[in-house]
Image (cartoon, rainbow, N blue to C red):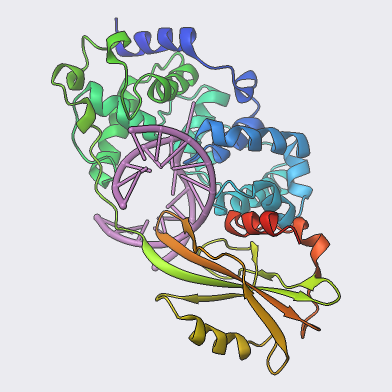
Length: 346
DNA sequence: AATCCGGGGCC
DNA sequence: GGCCCAGGATT
């Protein structure tokens, strides 16, 4: 039996019932694919549900404010996905009368859609034989064919894309693409795959050479840099606090946070105290300062480890407008801030 | 080609 | 602590 036949048979027997598998509507497939980029199904599923409930059509999503979209995306990470999602929804609704491009090439031009997502939508919605290559596909193919080209090199990307494109079932690209990803997620897992019950174990090079645990090969990424975040949680007598919108480049773009003193090296409390005294929002005013978390909160991102302290700053009056603390839940914030807000309970 | 962009879950 | 995840954009 050829590669794709084994795969699609396995898929028909083992696939999970997932909401986006009940439709071929491009809006829902697109939404699911953006949510699932670099995200496990278990984590993304509740977000897919809330997005489809709040925005049943691309027009509903297009009509929303970006702040509303980011708020619903809160906690899922990689927030550029949400900003691009909203921008593309507006483009589809306003320029294309709600109709998505119906092929790989057209889909690829949209914001937030790259090679993987264009292939996924084109195959699932329009039966175009465009092979997807995601983390699952890299793992399945590198093991079955015993390929040790690093998957995160440009050579590897080309090599695996070409191989997947050779293997894809041109009569049934939709099932083939979803099958190989599901197979990678459930059977050909990163750790401890049960190769004894695998339908490919006779022909799998890695299994027969006992190199399953060495594949796929990946070039090591640089270690995360340490940063030191001191957030200032102002509280005025009239029950207001201050949130600022993160502008420009860097993490958490367009999300809100408490005023932040950020450094690349740890600063002692005395030095920090001087900076707080001179802070624009309370310069020259009396205040009471207390450290909320005795133990530093370590928040780990892919490329940064944030060593975080929350300082509660009680003041009589703020030098800026501020927001009532009972409205703080309306703002989209990174999970680091969200966890504090929940624990502090204003 | 290398780096940046989150957060959760696993070992 | 390191690795992985239905990747894409930027430099």
